[in-house]
Image (cartoon, rainbow, N blue to C red; front, top):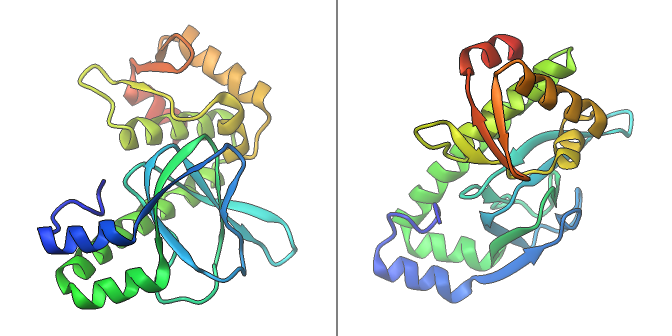
Length: 213
């Protein structure tokens, strides 16, 4: 998707020649911290989590990747993070070396990818302040606002949750009962409306933003 936008026909053909589609099950890893960085990808659908090993050996989720985001790191031999699927995900995967060589041959594609990578990095950096919120309701409200923004909520602020409540809990370091309790409370307070299994409409973004802090 985003990686292909703006490429001329020659660069697009070169990109397609080295790409292949790959599906990940929820919980399946795209790459592990410290492993040889052999592949990069463009996320087509689903949500991935980016995890980092802390100094004390603990695991910390440091960001989420949504459709259109670039996955992996170029010009690095080892993976700096563990990247795994929070939901079933579809990716277009490229051998890292082949992609690096293609970018050298097509400088315009390299500039486009740099912009896409910087945008992805900027989105990941938004994640740490979200986790720093002390209250669980603030974390859930912030995640709802973030998902609505990244999933392109329509004019009525309606969107489909890309994550189950269990996956939301995993991403925030909470238990699923806590996420469900706050989702229900937001609905009862008239902040959101739930539709079906995953449909959500944000009724009062202002109050949600106040809760999110």
